[in-house]
Image (cartoon, rainbow, N blue to C red; front, side):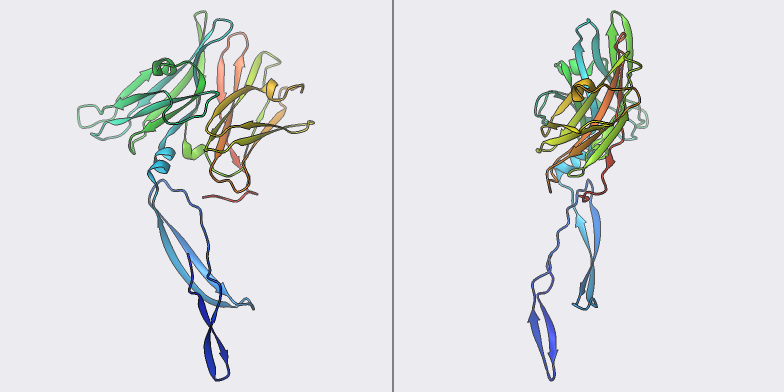
Length: 317
């Protein structure tokens, strides 16, 4: 944006223009819908007196990629695998159509495997939720007992539920473990991408160590979005901070004992993860979670802690 590039000055009996450098400013915005941003621009003289002021509103249009990304649902961790003791982990998924609309709610369920660079072309299956025939009432449901196996893959990863349009289904996810016929499991919280990814902003996650006196084990998961790698700084009491670099558009789950190798952890001890991006890099983001798995039953629990923004960093929205 550029202001007029001339002003005026007065000499007794003469008035003439004086040139100055054009005024420019930039603003970085992300939007998932048409939205107006208002600005007031004020010019001040050398004596701090106001010379002039103007106000304007700018309408921001979302591009299709931004709109689609922030409508997707993020499943932090999902998998279908057999452990060394013969127990079988899998992820069940239930989609529900809550809208009064005659239009089917459709989209894709995309599985992003650990150890690979992710894209929307990763293995996937389609979903289609038809409305009930009478009065266009909501109620259609689709269910997969082992959704990762239904996609045709195995292993550990993360999932996106990507709607074709504006209608986003209600999503329920559970992780299960079947150890010799004894089934244990728990729910996994799901989120919109807009709830988790904040490009360019340092975020932190703090959680307590909890192993029930060594009866359970903990893992830490990190998912990144965007092309740039994220440095995860790990801080806990009485130790030098450690770091691990996670590539852009990827996912990793690491045992807490590996992340803090050599440190004797105590139940209740606080661990903080800081997600740090390159200077002035507003293209990428990340979030984290942790798991607690009971050793004898392999009963899994997934916890996604609130990602707290570091307000010392510049905002990007």
